[in-house]
Length: 173
Image (cartoon, rainbow, N blue to C red):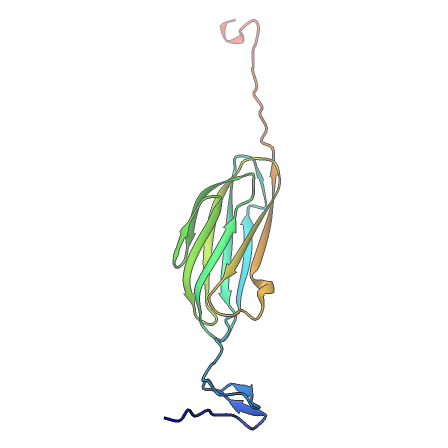
């Protein structure tokens, strides 16, 4: 059997996904690119200011801003030094926690989002910066919006005690 190659002689052609591609003298091998999904991540922390020993709740929202579905969506959050992990939950998928929290959110269709809530205890005073990221299996045309950072101010807790003494005892006079 004779091998047959197909070449495009025109400057522009359409691929199987009806996307315009440059043609020229390249063989048509039926290859196509994956459609992009533009994932974004926003975050917040509550409260903004705490005392050492208090809990901080971080809320992370992953959104698919692209026109196509995203698969294999994962939020990764490395909790800052000066915190201890308490819990993590998500509106879909599952989370595994520790100082690094990983939430496998499965897929996000276009325009949808998933929310992850992480609770940590502040252990030292200072400014804590919690940074997280989102990723997926599809190409992402805008990776600048795939990260979120939240700042929390932690003050030292007061170690105060009061001793009250009265001489003579006013209750017995």
